[in-house]
Length: 256
Image 1 (cartoon, helix red, strand yellow):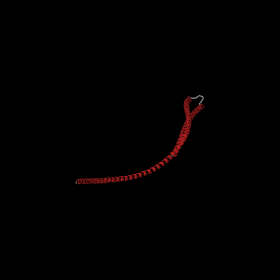
Image 2 (spheres, one colour):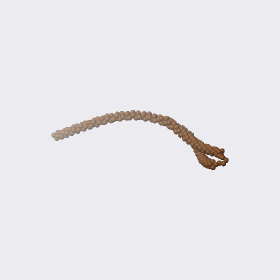
Image 3 (cartoon, one colour):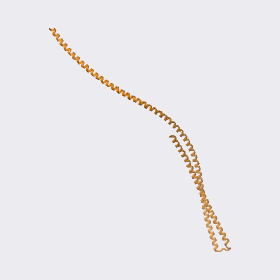
Image 4 (spheres, one colour):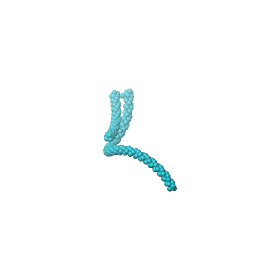
């Protein structure tokens, strides 16, 4: 049972270590992938947006150049007032479009610089995370070594505890046998004591009966002796009376 528990505990510890390491590595990879993906996506979007704006500006300039060339080809040496107004309107529109394009370019360049700064920050964060991940890996390796050492010490202590437990079990078994032997011996001795007690009780009853018989015999003897003594006293009184009578008779005889 102890070995099974130890195996379960060891397997749980190993699963916990592996799970912690895998979780840390997955988190790092996910964060790294997210940062890189975000940075690449932002940089790509900024580049595409800037490229599209440049293409639009180029198309605007190209369109304006084509219009200008067309106007110059179709115009007469002495342009009319209507043509001059159209040319002026086209120039105004071109200037306005150019101003908007330049403003858009400045906005996009500012956005691109901001995005490049954010990408740089994200890359720096990625490097920091990579450094932290390496430190975590080193810490995990150190913890693994410490855990292996603790497992070794735990196994040694467990083996020692099992050895002591087996020794204690043997001692307990011996003590149980000794206790069983003592209980059996005590039971036999108790039976002997009970038998001796019954024997002594029987002897005591016999002695009581004998004492009672002796007392009865003694009383009877005393009564017998008293009766004999009374008879003797009575005979002595009779003898004394007879002696007095004889004495009187002798005195009378002497006087005669």
